[in-house]
Amino acid sequence: MTKIVFMGTPQFSVPILEGLVANGYEVVAAVTQPDRPVGRKKIITPTPVKEAALRLDIPVLQPEKISGSPEMEKIGELQPDLIVTAAFGQFLPERLLQIPTHGAINVHASLLPKYRGGAPVHYSIMNGEKETGVTIMEMIKKMDAGGIYSQASLPITRQDDVGMMFDKLSLLGKELLLETLPKILDGSLQPVPQDEEQVTFSPNITREQEAIDWHKTAEEIDCQVRGMRPWPIAFAMYNDQRWKLWAVTPLEETTDAQPGTIIHRDKKALWIACGNQTVVAIDELQPAGKGKQAIAAFLNGSGQQVAVGQQVN
Image 1 (cartoon, rainbow, N blue to C red):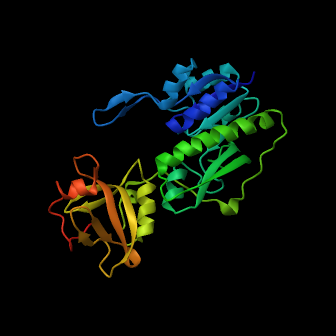
Image 2: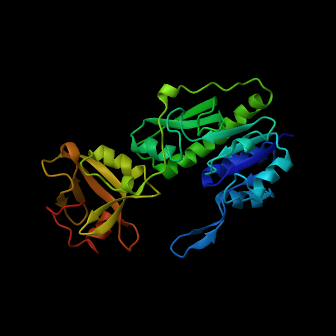
Image 3: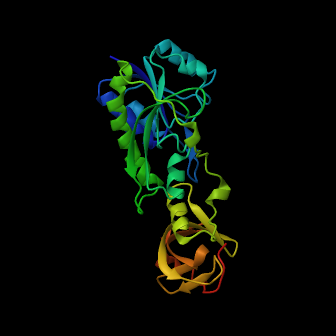
């Protein structure tokens, strides 16, 4: 039986871990991030991978930083045949990569060499890509730069957001990993080097990227909103109040109004001018200090003062 150390943190990683166990691989440890405070009440919460590992009776290791940690020494003592990572969230030192007999592989949520880095799904949607996918790759010292063992793709629809795509890519990643693993272990599949000329990056999202730029087209703003949902959520400012934008719809209407201007408002609709004379309708938003609301509920409640001609920044 192949001994595997699995390294992952969010819900994306859970089906992949479960697939390994269900298909007879011996997962000797699950390495995940430490428990963190979550929500407004800052409740200390285990990661989804920790919860799944405990349910599957797999020992859990939670280093604050894996490099030089006692947990890394423990991995060495376990003498795994392979390390499998999926959205672990930490950089792995070269010494760790050298421990397993068959090295380390990663389930990465993009079609490498596009979107190396920590937020590939966000950028794929924000940039209006028509498809994304998963890559099974060898892990080397340089981030997401190892050779490619296999890939599978999925279309990105106009309804997809980050949460939906993570769910789809997690299941696709599980299937692709289980299909690819036997060929890696028996040596019949060798990694193909990435084309460095095609490399793009997807660094973690910054606060500045969350802010809506109304000079973008309505289509681009829709991509930004979906590419930030359900986290971290794009926002705009109205009278020094933050609106988190959960859903918008690009409209066929055009306008000569300055981008960010409210051009239509009734009891059920709010339209805002965007770049290139395009228009977007706000479908769902979250005013400061409140929960998210359908636009009609907002306009007939705390948004009653919103009026045509006002500016949203």
